[in-house]
Image (cartoon, rainbow, N blue to C red; front, side, top):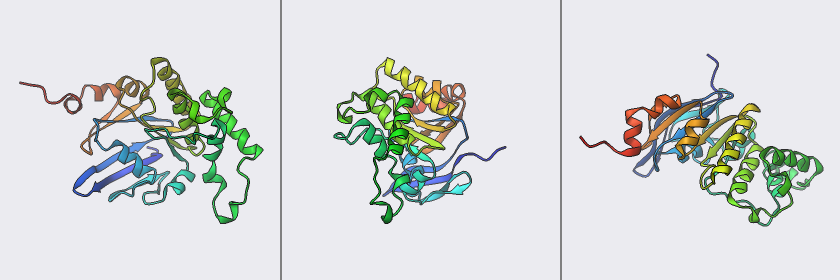
Length: 251
């Protein structure tokens, strides 16, 4: 079997006496959409933070294309092709939508002190940024201030910024949260298009209809531990998953 694109092996993370993630094993393959679900506090975003370099794992290792990336700083991991979104979208409000996307290209444009004198708003960068905005459906808003966008378009802008570095893997952290049905449908189509372009996707999502509909496989966390993994249909009917979400049924 082909080696996974992203491999999380025996990863744990503690905060004081709390074990937020406990011996997690998980793989993401090329061209796959993997859902990471679980109740609030299950350890999902902590897992994202370890993959993207915000936290180093206390135990275990994370590999991209067979090479260990756990412990690398976020900018190094981003440069290797992993992009991510955040639950709370915080654009540069006074910059335009286009400028926000160009700014996200900094991981490739500024790799040392000598590059700080280089112009960031080059024609090449703007052309690439406009291509990304067209991909996410924001090309008509390129010159609007980002702070004026409604939530649905802010979510798209967040994905556009992540796509500046996500050449291999995109981590989506509750990108559907707070959206209307029509906005969700647009975002589902966008995520599927991103997968078709060759980028694997790992998503955290509380909307079960979206998570189960988009994901090829699903991993379920509860109190930091993996309690289920498999196809959406298999996971949906797992007694441990039902208990984690709904509580133990009365007998």
